[in-house]
Image 1 (cartoon, rainbow, N blue to C red):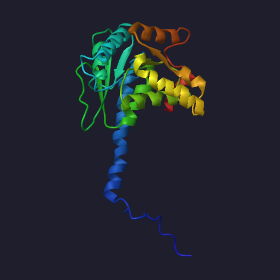
Image 2 (cartoon, rainbow, N blue to C red):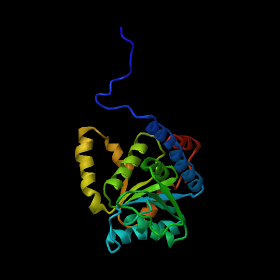
Image 3 (cartoon, rainbow, N blue to C red):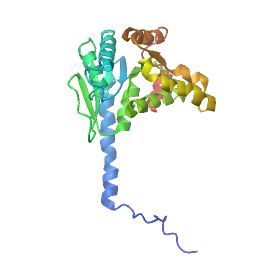
Image 4 (cartoon, helix red, strand yellow):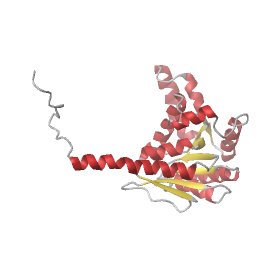
Length: 241
């Protein structure tokens, strides 16, 4: 039998040493993003992560709604974490910036879209979506999701999956603007549940509200008998995000 000479590459050349070295060193950049995020956010509690479209103009009702929700959350004692960019993210930071609690932006470097907004008491910059997404979840006492596109849906699916699978603690997940979400929620019920890809109980993982005060009340109702601070068991889960 001939000596084994490694896997076939099917026409693809192996990476050269320079590229492999660059990829190996990339891990230090990723580590730095996690370390900075942990150090700067660990003591900002309680906090609520707010999501929505980067394309929403300032004169749109959703912008005003996001601003009002975030100001209400901030005055109620919650730091507000957004993606740090324009649109709903800006509205969220803007509302929190005028409130009593910190306004935090987790900015991402994108080639065509995002520049950080000016309403951030604390701003972190990320190159990698995955490390940024951990920061949205790790310190959040609740998720508030306003109308948005693929990025917003990605964050919604992320937190639903983590809670559904028990990889993170149960927190309020609140969809805002029922008229926007109804079609998706009908599809959840009529297709996903009926096809057995999710269970009917999974629909209880989230709520839908339209008014800022209802969003805040839903969060306080959830924590009426439990602490905002994760239990020891929940902290162990969060260590493995």
